[in-house]
Image (cartoon, rainbow, N blue to C red; front, side, top):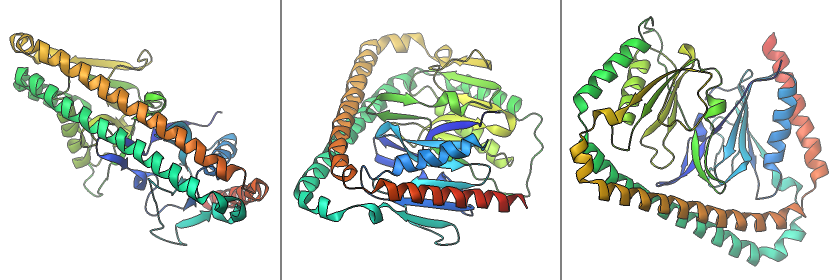
Amino acid sequence: MAAKIRRFFAGGNTSEGFYSFYHYMVKPDATRFFIIKGGSGTGKSTFMRYIGKEMASRGYELEYHHCSSDFNSIDGVVIKDLDIGLVDGTAPHTIDPKTPGAVDEIINMGEYWNEEGIIPHKEEIMKISKSKKNFFNLAYSSLSEAKIINYELEFYITESMDFAPINKLTNDIIGEVFADVEPDYKKTVKPRHLFARAFTPQGQVNMLDSILVDAKKVYLLKGEPGSGKSTVLSNVLEMATRLGIYTEVYHCPLDPSKLDTLVLPSLQVTFITKDDIDLNNFEVKRFEFEEFSKKNVVDFYAQEINECKERYAAACNRAIMFTQKAMAEHSKLEEFYVRNMNFDQINVKKEEILQRILKYAQELKK
């Protein structure tokens, strides 16, 4: 039987800068959390992929947390059955041990590099690092611009909406989803926060296909920004938390304060706000929020709405372009380290960590 693998983004390039949910990768009392420290090109992603591949081949359920600065790279892997994780703990998602020794452990890739081959390139490395940082800041600036444009668009749409029927719809949905739920007031359930989508050098990417792997029923809330979708999700989340139901909360990649997707694993129910994935294998309930808008108001602001959409797309595309430039600088940095790493020793360390994880697995079976 193939191992179940789900994929997310634990961090994102947003209008607020780099936004991190890395502290939600594993529970605070996890079996083990390996924090890998090291520069670009030191083998962190390859290290984690190796562990993931080996554990998947043994049938363990995995999570891959992809890098929003390079979709093809990973920043973390979690072995769900064992509650063991490995994460890239270097900037911009700097992670330090919270429970050193008992939970958290640092793997220092600096032990395997040849400083004599790196030090002569100090000035080049610093120059390229600064350039990379500047390009990311320009990307964040463009996303901030996109957010402001989106706020303007929200104004026009909100002006056109009749929220009374949306309030009724919200109550109807909540009543339907939680109809057979027995409240559990004996425990406090905390939602888990992540990103399903991200602005990456490869474009706008979503991971919903793997996130929805266990879902049976999908509620699709479709509408323009400002039509009330995120508010509906917030109300559903509030009720789920009140009833003691664990929820996965996926935030908007542009504005992390807004909700994009909700997953209620125990109910096999998911709420999404875009139909950019194949939904043929799900029971789908579709709600078009355009039905609750006043056409005369939309028509009145038609030109402004269209201009907002054009400006928004341009700002997002510019942000992606800057992440591509940042990625190019990152690749230059990698070259200095790749040729100065002792990958034979790193392979020995990979095998050591794998054997320790397998030992944890045996101990947890007892």
